[in-house]
Length: 443
Ligand code: B12
Ligand code: SF4
Ligand code: SF4
Image 1 (tube, rainbow, N blue to C red):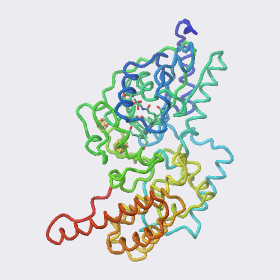
Image 2: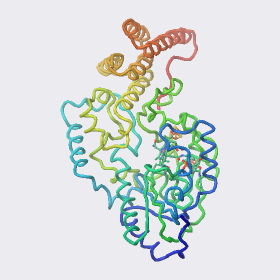
Image 3: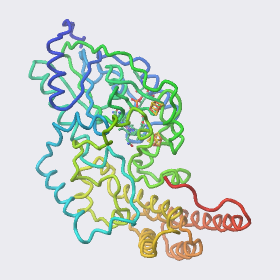
Image 4: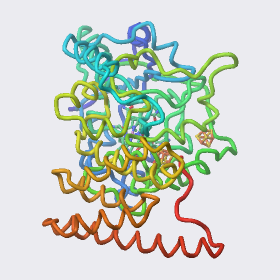
């Protein structure tokens, strides 16, 4: 179908932008054509093997709005701030949880306060990226984008929306619409709001007038994010090497590559390092950097969940505690696997100085991991046990498990872990002779 040729309707455009603003959203309009350079960027990533396993197939629908809605004329790019300077903008229209989700949030809050919950400190806590610590953004952004699409439909036009749920590359269209510009950290940066914004798109055949923003050059000689990235995943021009990025490592279903596990530190879902260092995310003078109320304080796992508690969660408790968060979409085993890696990293760098009851609890959690029902948990537990500072105890536990393990993949992981313990012993010997010690910095 050919695109409709109506002249841009400035009044309708203003109404759409105002309607979105009433929902706490920022909105701008791009023409419904492939943004220059996007197709090439996607192809380059595919060639480099940088596609995430959950990305949509590499077809025209990723770059061309006409393949999503034939006859489309405009793409309305939407942004919802969730942190820092933008938090205040989102707060007035925050929430609108569905009744069932509201019940889950209350149950999770009650569970957190329950006397069976482990003492807060100094038991090891993982790190969850701010965007996933509260309500799932697909829900927060989804009903808002659907409402904008319904507004256009009510005016007689066709409209389809997506919030990470459709094939189009959202950042490229947000940049093309002029909501902001993509920085060296690969994220869309909005002037005055920074990177902590969720994005969504509405593709429509309404004759909207395209936005004409002032030019915005966010980086200008800065490379703080490139230097701070713990995984060395940031190259030039906002290209992120997905295969190295910690955020991806925490979301993949297959095993976390051995050479990436230390870089994960305590991150069990996502990673915020390249956003935390970005000057555009600094709160204005005098204001504290707060997560948005839109994310909801009483639901989700929070930013520092208890790692041992997470490993003990059954299906029902997991659904109650984590079910409302974007971190839950890959399922409980993925998060428990990540928790084992984080406990391994904690063990290597902090166990030696921890109080005895904490050390005991962590060690028991690691041993339980070696006997977990799922092989991938046993494989990652083997690695984590090998990080324990008492290499003799680690070796004994691994040998004991190896003697009864039937799964060939887990046996291989146990043998690899035993080899790592032996290497650790050798390094400790070198350390006694003045060489650097087993372990490493903890982020
Ligand atoms: C796959 C994916 C990932 C993968 C791969 C990331 C990547 N860089 O491609 C992984 C798992 C690593 C990931 C991580 C994160 N993600 Co993600 N992710 C996606 C997803 C589903 C697709 C991204 C994609 O198509 N990439 C392909 C490349 C080619 O496109 P691109 O990322 O848009 O960026 C390129 C273009 O924008 C182009 N470009 C730059 N400037 C311009 C200007 C113009 C005019 C044009 C045409 C193009 C262009 O250059 C960029 C680099 O090549 C999107 C949702 C969606 N459907 O778009 C969310 C999305 C990009 N992710 C998001 C978020 C929040 C994150 C995390 C911050 C989460 C976290 N805290 O852990 C991290 C950030 C990592 C990082 N530094 O980028 C947000 C981004 C918000 C923002 N402000 O930018 C999105 C939009 C989800 C949403 N709806 O809010 N993500
Ligand atoms: S999310 Fe973390 S690992 Fe990924 S590019 Fe940013 S700093 Fe690097
Ligand atoms: S940290 Fe600096 S280089 Fe990185 S995105 Fe922010 S402004 Fe750009």
